[in-house]
Length: 282
Image 1 (tube, rainbow, N blue to C red):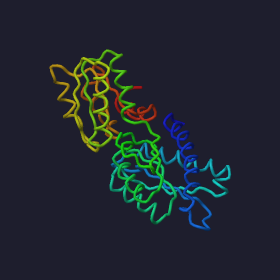
Image 2: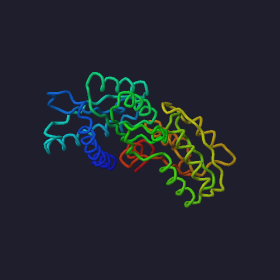
Image 3: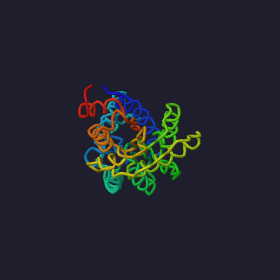
Image 4: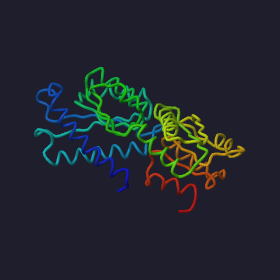
């Protein structure tokens, strides 16, 4: 079992426990005579979303639901998961939430990977007063909403930025390039990392560039910095898969690696093994 899936399972088991308490509180949301407690799941299972992460998320929730049901469910009722593919598109997230709440009559929702999608989803949850639990969306904007229906269990960009900044400072890097995707997550990560570096007294150069999350070719951007008189000594990648994986692959192909270090924010060993097969020997 991969490290990421292990974290997802552990985290989602806790999420299901929270949903149990929330479901008990919102008893009026469960139709009389209903033999199961329906919860919704949301996340990217297909392009242009980060489908690798979405599939892992869905598996984790399914395993957690199975574990809860084996223990007798919640208040003697089995939990039923209804999962919707949001494809990494905010409008799909909105539609999924409307369906789950109005048609499927779920009592709570859990999931999501992309911050921009989750921000759209919490508006629907807030509208109908349905609790929603954030599994892996990092944008600080989620917490800034202060919606009582939103349970933000995922780490926020500022916390991750602080760790990245400390790594950069302690490692002695002097010239930092941040490649940030054109989403709430990417923009927040770039802003928070820049601020964290300033707060730590970083004296080097920091350049932030926004790139498309769904691009197929990042080599024009990478080549621009390869040919620079003062190229970066580290590139921080704040681009969710598959875009982030393509950046690593193309950086290797044009010769940026190993001369320039790469730091991929938030990824994990299991996924990088797939990239390694593409970019070079193990």
